[in-house]
Image 1 (cartoon, helix red, strand yellow):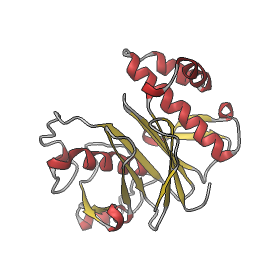
Image 2: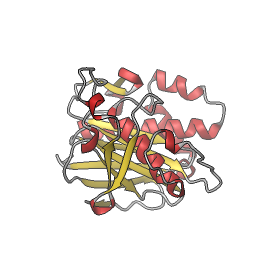
Image 3: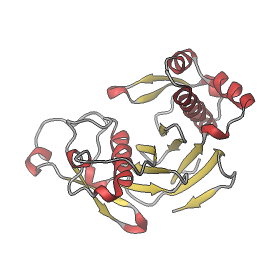
Image 4: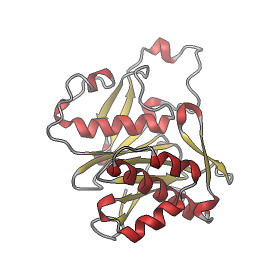
Length: 243
């Protein structure tokens, strides 16, 4: 894994064969298996299994270890953290919907990824306005995935207590995150949540990963990154690379 690259893996549950499901489920640990069994609907269980198995495969590849040697725990605000082996310089994020799952890993810095199934019947109403300044409801999915990805990268997750952000078009189709909280609040002595970075320096990359899904990758470290995308169970097995 190169120092300036963000690696992205995607997969579609519908493209996984019965024999492959057996192999994927075997990668999960006891707690992941127990969590998978709690889903009421099979579509949700399969999405969970695929996302967590793919995460294990991706991270074990980056660390050069077996997927079974990875041990996770929930950090602050429930963010998944690698407990062992030591992987302090490896940052990762994953997201899943019934249609597709996505995993991202990098050594660049904190990241967050979000993928959502496109739903033309969805009425966003005032949902975006609670989190984004001057939200545009005509591009709801693009903004919502950017929002989710950003707060995942910050390590807090989407929460009603988060300050509103503003999305501005930047170079190469990226979106810049602008902090809309009052300047006196930003300069106060009140400590930010652990892991928080400067909001104005974050960049969000809208991703064209699956034809019926919207996705976004948030990178808190400024500067150019190479995005490398590999479809595991998807429409093709072709590597895609862009800056």
